[in-house]
Amino acid sequence: MVSQTHASQLTLPASEQRDHIRGPLDAPVTLVEYGDYQCPFCGQAHGILHELMTQLANDMRLVFRNFPLTQIHPFAQRAAEAAEAAGAQGRFWNMHDMLYENQDALDNESLREYAAELGLDVDRFGSELTSGVHVPRIREDFASGVRSGVNGTPTFFINGRRHDGPWDLRSLALAVNRARAEPVSAGSRPAGRRIS
Image (cartoon, rainbow, N blue to C red; front, side, top):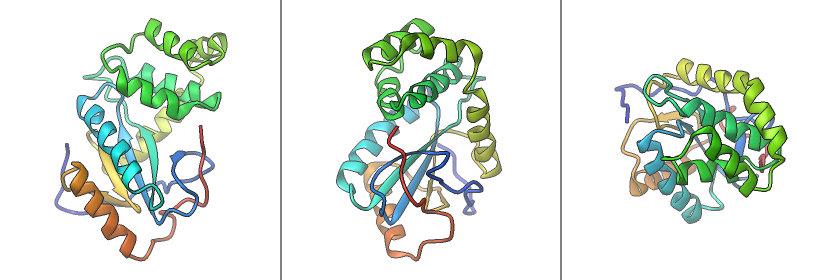
């Protein structure tokens, strides 16, 4: 976990046109996570965020952006590409969950098995991984994170403001509830959701 003494702002606001969004259209709070599928801390956060979404189902939407730390996590980039390839077939969140639930098996063969398990067109999935069609999207996510001050994973932004405190369930729930009580800043809440 990374912390700073000042609050950083999200430089690329959440958008239904580009982001994978889980949650209700009218949620007052948007939590953006920059994550890495091979990062053990992101794996811990995944369970916490799942519980948080269950508790605050009507009050929060979740946005996930790729921030693969390839120097220390050699499978993170390909896993991010697999999630995006699944998203191209309308199954982003299914693959996202599967990758976090199977962090110890992110090799190419396992990714293809997950694609088959999710009922994806495995030939299309494999072709997109081979050709790197989703690499620009992942680079865009990564660059937006760097511009927003992200230098480790997981990093969270709540209504556009970096959350520098602890990210256990209780702390995140308190932060989301505080954000819910504050006026929403322009661009921090997307107008819709993508269910991919």
